[in-house]
Image 1 (tube, rainbow, N blue to C red):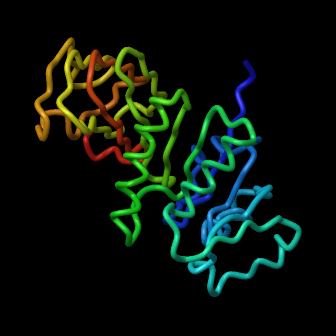
Image 2 (cartoon, rainbow, N blue to C red):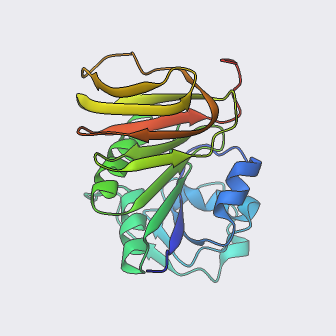
Length: 217
C-alpha cells in the first residue's frame, strides 16, 4: 500500500530545523486554525484550513486566499487539531506528521496530542510529533520502532501505563525485556549512540527526543 503522509499544522511553537524541513518535504498538508502561520515558512500549501479561527488573529492569510476553509464554532466537542486529523484520514492519510504539537503555552494541548498519538497508532497510523526542537513517536506493543537520532542526542521513554518487556538498543543505557512500573522515571534522559531501536511487549508509551540537544553527551 502506498504511504500517504499529511502534515497537520498545529498552533504550537515551531523551530525551523533541517530535520523538520526534510520531514515535511513532499507531504500534503492541512492547517488547524492558527497553525496556518507555519505554512509559508515550511513551503507548504495546505489543501484545507479548519477551525473556529479564534487563534488566527494578527496573521496575514493573503498568501492562502485560495485554500478552502472549513469553519467550526468555538464551542465544539473536538479540538481544531483533531478535526484536521479526521479530514486527513478521510483523504487517505496513512502517516501523520503533527507539526507544532509540542511545547508552548497550552500544556493541556501538548499532552492531549501525545495521548491522541497513542490512540491513532493503535488504529494503524504512523505518527510523528514535532516542535522542530523536540520530536515524539508512540511506541506500540508488539512492534519495533527504529529512530534515526544523532549520536549524543537526548531521548526519554514516557510510560503512559505500566510497561512490560521494554527493550532499548543503540543507547547509552540499553534495556532488554525490562518491566517499567507506571510513574517510574527510570527511562528519562537516555542518550542515543546512533540509530535507536525500541520494542515493547505490552503497555502504552511515547518516545520524546531532543535531536539537537547534546547536553547528555
